[in-house]
Length: 139
Image 1 (cartoon, one colour):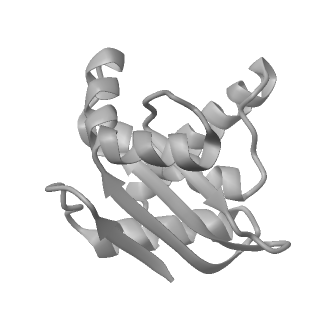
Image 2 (cartoon, helix red, strand yellow):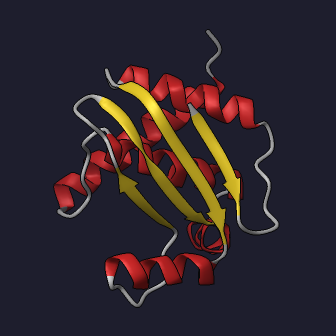
């Protein structure tokens, strides 16, 4: 099950389309879905989570809490829509494209991909691009 929760004024249009896409991505990685929840919020909300749970005094676009067991994915993905908007401007892409990248980034972490080293980050970016391409593919 894919859940969408909102702690700010943002609302994801076409929740079903996003949910179907995320499920396809999970299947494409040979994983099973238990429950993944997206919580959309503002910078300050995510900053407080970063301080409280990770002891990081920084703003970020995404924090994921991985509760996966083996190949079964479950967890919470918090996304600051304010940070996504800023990043979309910085990287000169649409808000929707940057949102998809961040949303799938969290799922890819749940699938076992890391992004700490240069080579891990390069693979993560490659996977993000591959999975974003799946968004418009109809089966």
